[in-house]
Image (cartoon, rainbow, N blue to C red; front, top):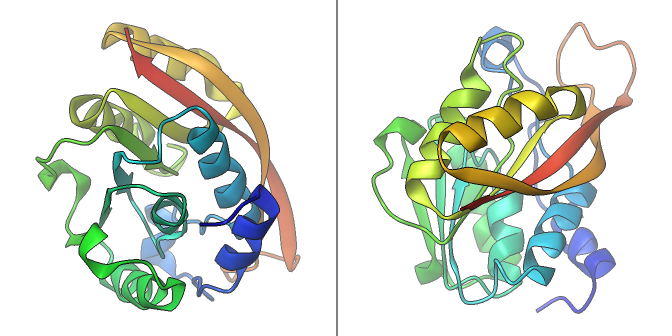
Length: 207
């Protein structure tokens, strides 16, 4: 088990990510979670007691960094859920590369709407809802049905929206951790090799 957040980030940085996205990925607002942000998020969740010994679901897992970080920090089981077959393929390879116990990783190539299991904690970096309207809301609603604690990335300026959706479903936002996602050049229209986007990691708990 990594003994520091920086060590966790180093381990995650060795895993594969998407190199290039196309039109379909853009419509679904697929962006890879960078290793530093993933480490920051899951280390914070670990320090809150929401990872070690817990069943975790990684919704829209992509290449699996959030869920793998949870396994490295002692999660008893992690569901990796994504409808993108290429993402699931990379996720499988990353799980093998990370050296975590295979039986603790449950990979589901499916839309999150098809997930019917229960978890202690959901971790997710959902679409921001700018291309596919309300896509972030769909992720939140599904997360509320699956677990009592949710860690979810959203743009800081949508904090009011996140808090309202949470309250409407019997949840409270307990923490908002400011983060800067590192977005590599993965779409043709990206001009710079790297840019940062200010987001918040929202910890949401059932009241």
